[in-house]
Image (cartoon, rainbow, N blue to C red; front, side):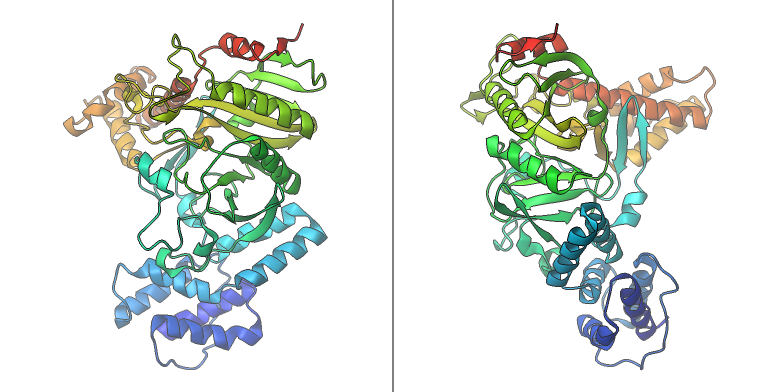
Length: 490
């Protein structure tokens, strides 16, 4: 296929999938030629996209033709894919108008479904890559192996918001990234929202971890923080998009996300395991008798507050303030020291028939000589599986494991099925190997071994959540809440 035919097919795709106005087809085609630095081309051939639902194959054909013709070198494909699809996509203002119209006429779900579908269709959301990531349920958790991105192990980068030299855009999630060539963001499209009376915007993650994974970002480049107003903003979002959950990472390294320098929340259209967690102990507060306060039956430490807006805000903030100053030398909990604040909360909210359900995850990033990566972090014996921060998503029961495991665990399963010892370069997997082998029948076949690996991953991830629990039993959590004046239900 030559370059001209490949461009024709993509232009037809844009007309069918990206709402390109037929009047703009010639202009768009010429813009793509300019992006590629091609001065001339044969006339329109009438080639169509063949019913393509995504542009992957069409873009591959174009890149192959361009490399063969010397337009650009092999290895530069991602840059040109982004540039071409940016040229064929609606401009941000038009996307915003269409989203607003759908929201007003058909409701929030129709609007978000359209925007997500558009973000897939214009190649910003890499759905074909995401669909290739292994994903399964085990031990009440959801486990994914992320082959699309490398491991993130540097808390210092999180504190800086992954800023790069030059200072524009200031970080990876600033709105100025929309269309920014320096980060291959020409296809990024965002929509404006109001949270707490402030200007925020919503976009989808290109490498989302769950269904319609998106990010609500403050227009102002200010650091992550969780205060009383954060609970209100989260509920504002839930009012606007009642079919989504929304949550906020703790604003501290090791227990927060990968961008702490810019205030933002994460949410989307999936029910995560934490949302289904049952109550272990029900409590009450005399000031708000209609509110529900549940200590959850969950390996992490989570308190769920359910009810109306006023009571959820007040009770959630009482818990936050109490936890931020809570100290127990016996439990190894130090709220702050010379290195700064260590206690923080990760709140996440969903709308239910009972009103708002605010799950408040208690976190601590304190370190010790024994646990230099974090006392309430994955312990060293599990680092071969997960050493990255245990952030908001994992704390809710969806684990994102590093892509290297896809190959390493396959080798481990083959060794078990064949009755072989682990190779020397996988000595760090000794615990995983022994525990997985114990899960297998006496003569495991390949299917047995792979099933046992999945069970083992679920067990390890559940134990990692237990590592992150600041209170190891519900009774200790109940004691903490009683100190706030809450009482157990009779």
